[in-house]
Length: 379
Length: 84
Image 1 (cartoon, rainbow over the protein chains, first blue to last red):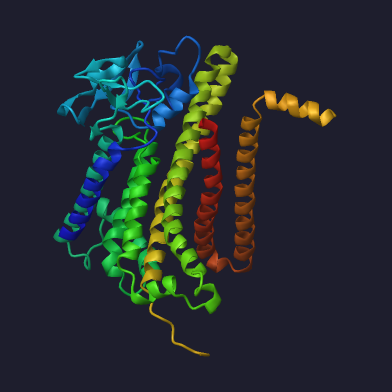
Image 2 (image 1 turned 30 degrees about the vertical axis):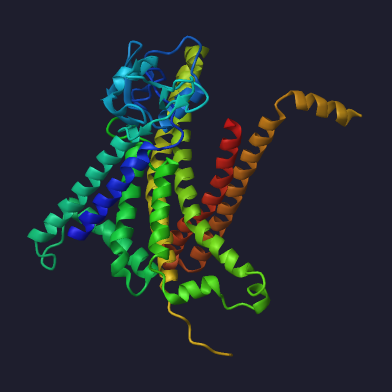
């Protein structure tokens, strides 16, 4: 149990500074549409339609991207959001920690403001003496970071709660029920179908990492579908997070590969002209070493981000047709609600499936790096 | 001569965006085509041997996820090109 705690804490610590460097940040400084009551209360809940219709770019990227505050809803044109701490270290003036409320709607505090220009758009910057924008070292707790912390707390509670049941009951005498029951079902499925078959002989060494990856991706995907706080942060749809997961798999595969694995990459069993004057096959193998985790990263990122975009688009139909009269708006709202519910259920399936596929491919890559050499014949 | 006029008119309009939209549609079509082939094979195999239908269904879902990954690569590139 201590080992799994160590792994979870390590993953959480890794995620915090990398979350601060997430790409596609669009500062949601108090505007944008509200989609909190996504399916049931959609038409009646949202106020504050801007004068000239829905700004699709702002709406879409505001929900998918990272931001310095967690925007919950908008009541009578005033946004209600959770202010998050901004932690920056400038080269000239050292550390600054302050609430992001001070920077909303273009405000400036202690020399820092959110850039509205093309360069560093949406990020905290300060102005140097000659007028250029300088980006300080930014370790702020953004929406993604807080979302990661909440989700990792949920994972830790789930797993430790399950372990507690197993400490108090003899599993050979009674079957687990409730939380321990459902977690046992998931863990046994992942262990038997994915890890044992994928990794092979020494699967026990890699079980902690692979199970952690599975539950991390699964819980984060599911929490991304929930439309209200504490869910709704687009975490696995952020390429920085999936990059970290892919790097973890890359390290797990290559740091522990055995001699046969490296021999297959650097001096494979192919005709000599493919490897001697120009190392063609070794080059292709080394590129393959990088493309496999790269495809893991892109697959998870694109699936989850595309799912969120589709869900947001379906709900946006209601707002876009708001100006077109009650008949069109009403009928399209009903269609949007049903289609939205269907898309939500599909996203639940995609959440589980992407976690399953990531874990399965990681297990297979790890297994391929630990394979023994086949017995030689026809030499 | 007609094609030259059409080309000039199209260059004025956003030909780049039209190209991106066509590429996204092709990516969606390619993904749907690949996954429907998997579906057909799964149906045929399950009809031949119903007792292994569970195994076929699991394999089909996994392979569909991998094929969808490829189609989403293309969609991602379209999104990036659209926002440039």
